[in-house]
Image (tube, rainbow, N blue to C red; front, side, top):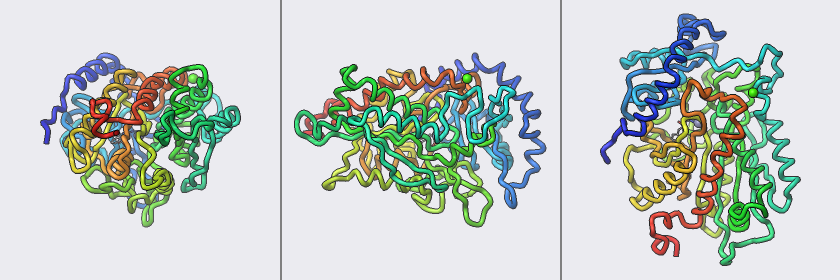
Length: 459
Ligand code: CXA
Ligand code: CA
Ligand code: ZN
């Protein structure tokens, strides 16, 4: 195992920025938290953890954990770890999970409930609150995509690749210049996959998909790099992996902070599987997911037990043509923390069976290049905490696709709005990833070129 340095200069820098920017605000908000509509700490902790009702999850700041192993232990209580700082983490937990974290010896403090953005106006069911009206609910996102495809029929086509648990369409948009079947050299076009919104409350990721479609559609024939990529790549955009969870999160006009899908679990009143723990590679292997239905990181009853994961995994497998996976690289968009992450998540080790030093170096080189372009922090995902059953581990471990996770804006839980940044930031924070996306597309034909080994791997 490589020496693990949890308190790297990078995390220390991030911590300092956070403390300076939001320390005072957090204190105030923590004091205000018990008056939130979700009730007091005492009330929450008297709620049942099993039985007739779903328990209420809430955001907490946990002060004390400094190493990845300590953060993995926090996650093992069933909470989701939403942000990682030098000496603390932000989690989502139900009262029992929060108590388990306290018993680990850490200080646990309730954070404010998600913001009320209704502006005193009535909520429209299944719509974003008035102050966040620029976000797209499911119907609005589909309408926007249909319009993009209709406006650029030579560049885009939409496929329904399957259905969510509640029966919503899961779609993939194919973006490429349909007039060219191969690259200039006659080779099959390398394919690149962008996936969005595995986690319900991470709505900014759907906006990222809409941004990419707008940008590719409008810049073809205008911007040289975009034109070259649409001529020489096939881009697949899956804009919404978790439409049921997303709609549930916004249904009442007050954000619910929901993460999982909305699939019932047999023998339990707790709904939902964490889609990013349900992929079929080392599923349940390593303490990086939970077998409890009430957990924020419930892994499901079996790999691909979530219909949404099965649909996208089947789609990825369908891109194996003549025995060869056509998709070479991928980004799965999440929020928040401003990170570029690469696999493996199941082990702290840099290299492992199926991840050679050259593989790792190509991942890190292009990961760091993308991060240099958007100001995110690049690292292996297990530098945060262990995960098993994540999409990146499956895409790389099973399909040999160079798969990254982007954790988008904000960097911090406080000032930037955590999972719910105001809609004013959408344009800036989606365009912020333009260059990173182009860099991945431009490298996708031979990721090993980045480490000077094109001849060895891509001849
Ligand atoms: C993550 C993503 C991919 C592999 C390992 C870890 C981070 C992600 C998660 O835990 O699934 N973080 S998040 N978006 O806050 O849930
Ligand atoms: Ca607004
Ligand atoms: Zn996520």
